[in-house]
Length: 296
Image (cartoon, rainbow, N blue to C red; front, top):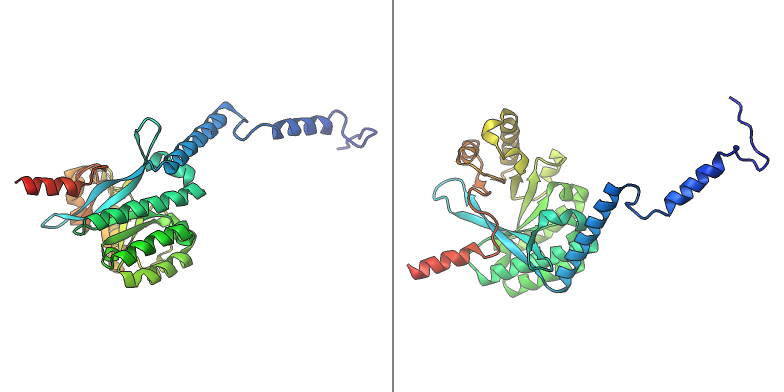
């Protein structure tokens, strides 16, 4: 096919119009291509602003959820501390509502620092508990996060033995060498490591020989409604088998029914966590238990 060019070397009425449209499109702000994209961008920016304000004014805290032993005496194995922020009205905002916006930003590392700081303070005040705190692999290279950890480890030599650091499968696989080196350096402090969202990502099984994870937490998508899903039962059995092969403690997340709990115990799961045993609470559960014991 032959295209006739105009005197100025452009397709008649063609490239000039395309160029004009491209320039016009380039001037549209991010998310402005359509109303839905624009709304998503505005929501994310609003979310980011909310988190930044919460961090600036020290409006962050942890919500604690028990992780229960699957076998007798069925006590609390440890608690998990989830980072929360307070919005301008004082509402407690869970991580699922903002973490996806901040995870790859500087403010995300600040939240890592605050989560660790809140967790270590809780351990300092309650010497009889163990607590897990979520972290991103990116935090390992963040100097402020390391300073927080070092400061508390120097203040209390026993605190490391009661601290569990949870790293998601996706985060660990982003920088496996960095995570492995960090785990190795923390061995002398007795810090335990848990692989969170196990089964949801793409962990190379070969890396299990190199990682120093003490526990895995099977992702909740395989646990919810487990008793009614033969496929998920097969997945969970396989994940438990892999973890046991590497001598790891197995925790099942998102346990919501007694039926699912009983099935998980029969599969060899060591610990159970979910709404069946209690929702995350900004009031430390062990404080309530201490009050009950003192009043008995």
